[in-house]
Image (tube, rainbow, N blue to C red):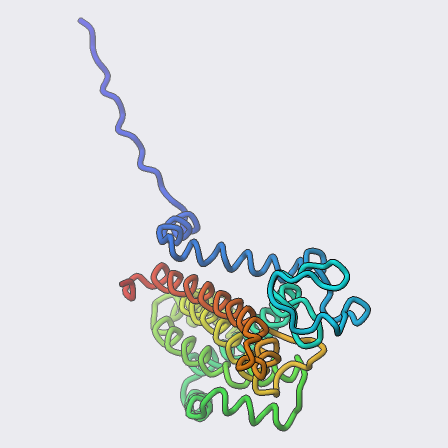
Length: 303
């Protein structure tokens, strides 16, 4: 008699957390589109010195006679200005590429520093409790009670223009968001068994906070950090538009928009319009990525 051996059932494929995260993120075509656009913007900003048609802040490459030329116009030296020029004869396409560098650097730099400061204070408040928690949270409440743009304007009015001054002002107005977010997550994690076990083993406080508590607070921190980068870019553009941001020798998108504001009524729309579109696309792409990160890292908030 012949015997038949039943085939073993297929072993289900087990995804790693990273694979699951990637698959859930790319499930949204809008978020994937936003990520591709943002990466393209970052690549343009990084490669601007090599791919920009001209260095718009090298006086040797400028011709004042080419000032305020319309998009697609050929300049005196045979150079085509695809997005037109500003009042100084700078190529707007090149200006946008270089302006993206400053906007992204200020936005990302201020967000990273504010995250480090706010996350550390929020973690300390949640773990220490008592008067330390009350003091830090009162500072957070005080900070959040002021409009961010007003606080940044007051700081820059005292410090003056400059990239470092703008970064410092943005850190001052942003750290409280990170502190409140991390404190809320850390308070929940602090009552869990693994934290109590670490305390019973008399592990150093620093190790408990940074090796056990902080990693479990990263998901909401990543989401807030992504959103705050877009917010910092928008704030920096507003400050530069008002004349208190970056210096004119290192312009961002906000300063480029400001340079063309006075020519809007005379029909020279392109000086402000195209930098405004670049700023809008940058902020929207970051927000699309942050929105999907929120849904993936916290499914309870998924729409």
